[in-house]
Image (cartoon, rainbow, N blue to C red; front, side, top):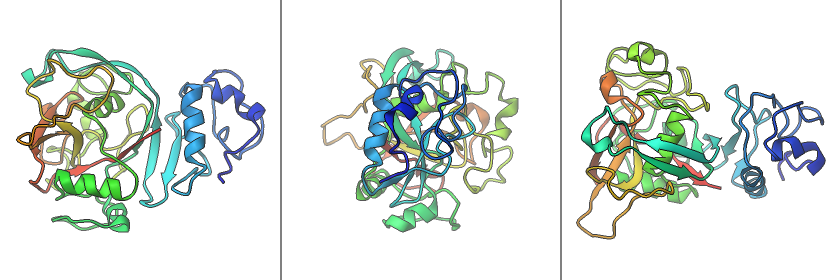
Length: 293
């Protein structure tokens, strides 16, 4: 059992999501590193996280709160660090973007876990799976996997791909601009490996600045598969954050998000979306696994 199993009195300020004095109890457990600037999680989210830690697949790091104020867990089978994304509402899409990013619409998202970085090659190899990677390095993002292979890898270790709504919600982290740092792309190189600073190759994950919730490499390095089938716009899109999937056999196209080391700043925005067939691979396409609470 994790060291997060502390008396409820010790965790009550965190369980309630109350900002104020740091909870007492020393460095062990959920209160380690907690400050008034930490994210206000719902009690149900913390309870679900604690339930996860009862099993063998998740562990708490020595300092569960990261510098961005969100909670982190380690997924034991893959070794990846996950961020607890708090539930909430946001406006999905961009009225100033391409037609497939419209109409902008409000979406409610339940709290969930999302990998802090794209899946690394080390993590992929720990679980195993098919791929045709063009680069090699333990901390490089996994690439050269199609949608089916990414999905199979996730299922093999109890994970899943995020929905398109979850991906954008986590990327924005409460912001509303073209990028989570604002509307001026001049700062993009501080957060992403893209065409202007990448030397047209992937880089080790987590080397640049994270978004406000502690997630790295959202706008660059490799593109990231989502669970959803491709739709030409958001007319009729779910409002509950779930994946927009079809049961028609001819729907073989799936969404990918983010940016890559080959794309310019305009293609590395929070709302940018594109698609690929579920069985096609290319070198700048990887994935970022998720898990439900």
